[in-house]
Length: 115
Length: 119
Image (tube, rainbow over all chains, first blue to last red):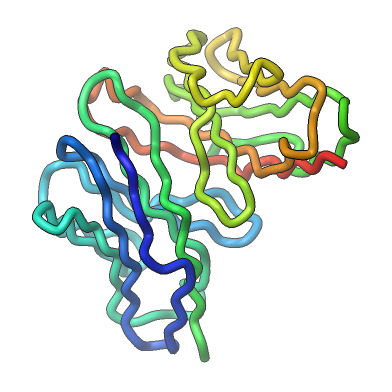
């Protein structure tokens, strides 16, 4: 069975400091992994996607994530937080290969950026 | 269209009424998905269409929920005899292909959602 755990429901950082949002997954096979961001009253926006190529994935707005199979982790990082990064972030696992299509979402991490 | 659109954005209804939620996917996208998101939770899969065919409806909670996509484009999620526990954000997403074609997780593009409140 596939599942994803976001280890922190809330994270607060000061503007200009690094961001770390943690995600662990459970999958019988190497999955596709995604990070999405949700700003208030907006739809979910894709930040980045890992499928099976490079383990370090760069996304939009300076975010990146590293796929670590040995740790079953896909943590999201950004070197320097900006006020506009305040939002809710979802880690998503998509089961592998043919016949699969469902996204399995984590419960979300709400990022607060302090001035 | 430029993105996935959903209507209405907000719906308040009384218990026992039927509601229809509409999703207009990105033009040309083959696959369409419905998810439900309870407060404080991540979205949960409801159902999936490939063109007009409903490939999987395993996530629909009971037979009061149904969905259709008759012409392979716009989709409607219908909830009959609504109950208070149906209150949630209902999200629609579309993807250009389905994973059966590409063999890997396809990027899904989400609409803004419909927030349903059942009184």
